[in-house]
Image (tube, rainbow, N blue to C red; front, side, top):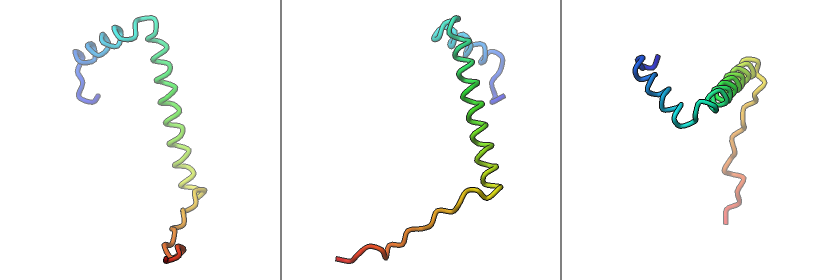
Amino acid sequence: MFGLGTQELLIILVLVMIIFGAGKLPQVGSALGKGLRNFKKGVNESDEEIEEGKIEEIPEKNNTDKKDA
């Protein structure tokens, strides 16, 4: 898992506990989980739209529309 061993994960957990406190830890975990869930949902929805052809190509702007002074 990202090259992190048990000792590194333990140090990270202790630092998080010091920064946020034990009381806020469940709220932080919940917010992080919701954020990841919404991100995955958005990625999956955009992939489905691309596969179904719902996304249209953006037309290129022509530089000839400008008037030469």
